[in-house]
Image 1: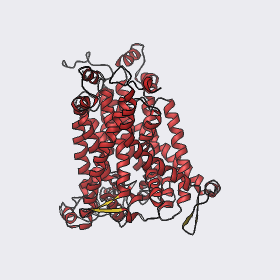
Image 2: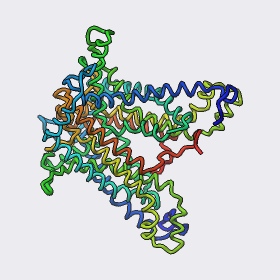
Image 3: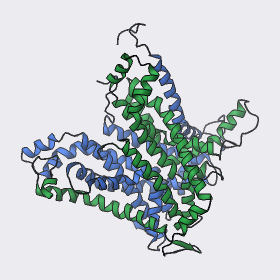
Image 4: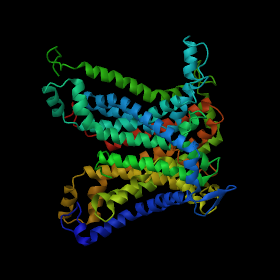
Amino acid sequence: MATTVAESKLTDQPQPGQMLRGIALLAPPVVWMLVFYLIPLVILLVYAFWSVDYLTVVRELTLENFKTIVTNDLYPRVILRTIAIAAIVTSIDIALAFPIAYFLARKVTKHRELLLMLVIFPLWSSYLVRAFAWRTILGTNGILNSFLQWAHITDQPLTFLLFSKEAMVLTFSQVWLPFMILPLYTVLDQLPKSLLEAAADLGGNGWQTFRRVVLPLALPGVVAGSLSVFSLTMGDYITPTLIGGPGDQLIGKIIADNFGTANNWPLGAALVFPLLLVIFTMLVVANRFGALGRSSV
Amino acid sequence: MSTPTAIAKPPRDWSAWALGFASLLIYAFLYLPIIVVVLYSFSATKVNAWPIQGYTLDWYRELRGDTEIRNAIGLSVRLGLVAALSSLVLGTLGALALDRYRFPFKPGIRFLIVLPITLPGIVTGIALLAFFSLTDRPLAQWTIQLFGLSFPIPLIVAHITFSITLVLSTVAARLFQLPSSLGEASADLGATPWRTFRRVTLPLIFPAMLSGAILAFTLSFDEVVVSLFLKGRDNTLPLLIWGRLRLGLSPEINAAATVITAVSLVGIVTSTVLLGRTFRSGGPGNE
């Protein structure tokens, strides 16, 4: 098997040493990932089958944590709420990303590189900073409230702005938006111009062309972006902590609390299972839509 | 372009204007929080309120005099450098192997390598926390001292892990674009694989390697989601900001956040310039 498989891009002739060389190159990063990612992940999942007795972990297998998650009605509610919020955030981001991605891919002729970089930059600016900026904006004595009072639109601070589901949705939509714009831009950019012209020639108006031609072809980008936005929202605990109210906790925050103040690691680890289940389901769906692509990695 | 006349114009030109206007609003939405933080870091009053009463550099002076913040910036820089350099080597090796060679389990290995960015950061954080805690040695004791500087192992390990994915994808994307004929030509001319790598491949992928490493530094410099679980004795700058946020907002935090943003800006610009044209496009207006 070795010689037939070992063809590479370098030579057409299969060489016996090729595969060995490949493995030698690959070994350091793969060993690192196994030791410092996969093994820790397995340990984490094993934790879910342990239990806690007076703050010490009992290393005996039990399904107690899963029973707690299913029977205690807090957890199913939190999981459903998380999925609902992630779905709303994803929909908002699709709606916001479409015009800007379409504009950049099909309408802009000058400075496109710069405009794209402007989309990417917020991704690389600190997530923590952006999340806490929303708190500065929405707080009772925050910028929005003082602005509204300064402009005489309200005469008292609006207290419902911060610490609410709506504020969380707003923050999430803003911080993850570039993750939706970029894959959408990529698919819209690759759309052959001839297809749009053909649609117009056949008498399709703007909306028809968009719905019947652009949208189906852009679907892999939408799915790829949705996967990122959904997964990031599902696992986040920073925004729920800074922006969310006490009544609207998400699963990421509950997991983080169990590994922090609540100090119930096995229960926290068990809550990772529904999280992974949702994300892997989405991965499978995304794969079907060809959204994961045959990228270089 | 000729002078636009009513006839020469495409019939639905207004859509470009509408889309452009919508895009402008979306850009504003993307940048609003960043602008707020930067603007209010210069505000003279302690409360973040509208309108801004006056401007000052006091908060930056306070930042400079704050030893806690100085130490935190030091640790963030160390961590970023170690993560960038280690992932530069590990990520490039992985990218070369995946691009140039065939071996069993390749799809599985690809999957493993992108897993840290596919799964939410919290999973990396608590998985490594569980991993390091198996030894019953507290996280704070996992710090080693070198040349009088502290190096917290759990944070270093975590930052290298997500950085590998980043460098690997950047370098792999570049390798993917390179025609394989270059390597073949070099081999035909009698060059050994090592010589081909040094004289042909390396110069071509070096900008991508550097770009990936800078991105890794940038990401490491403001990472908080994973790091919060693995914090030992010392704070990184984002961890310190997180800690202080709980005590309430202060203009000094805005100033610290502005510093982080500035570092990110320099990082992303350098990295983009290094990569050259990041996005190949076939859209209108492109030759």
